[in-house]
Length: 112
Length: 114
Image (cartoon, rainbow over all chains, first blue to last red; front, side, top):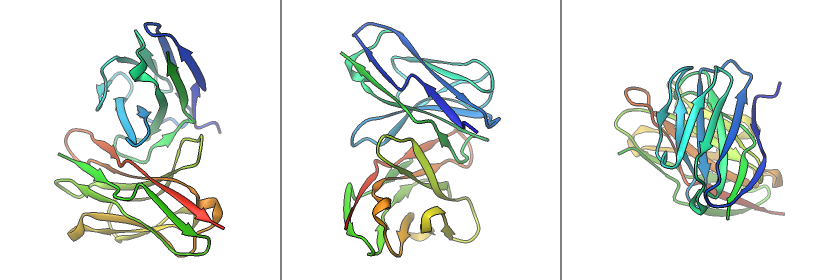
């Protein structure tokens, strides 16, 4: 049982490049989330999807877009990467909004 | 505004000693409360959660937490720490009504001395 998977594990981008972080869950969860984790700041919610077909902004959505492709998959896109987006990105899912979240292993992104 | 405070950034304890990690929250109603643990280079794993009922909740790995409404606290405890408990611990609160909110504290990094 894979749980929540994320690809890639590591990525280095140059300023202005674009990329998409992929996330998939196999637990039949309704809700999915994207967080970024920066030293001393804990986890901050970027976007979430309460259910298939819906997405909403979190605390720090600027510079990001998301797509809930289907119930399993929730991708995060950086259209024009900036050094301030250097971070570790975590995807998570839960059966319902506000419930226990299950996290992926994270993607470490560096923007030069 | 809702918030979660973990006042201790770092804590160091000796193996076998007891542990208490503090968490205080600000919320208009009783939220859902969680403690997660993150080992180096890993994602977060749920230790325990409080939704309602008994205010003392038991979790995995011998951890427990007590919800104290009067103090707006949800402190994590363990009677005897093992070296493998060295990690970062996050408290989180989730809204129970209205607009969705899921807020994490900034974390407490635990170091265990042999």
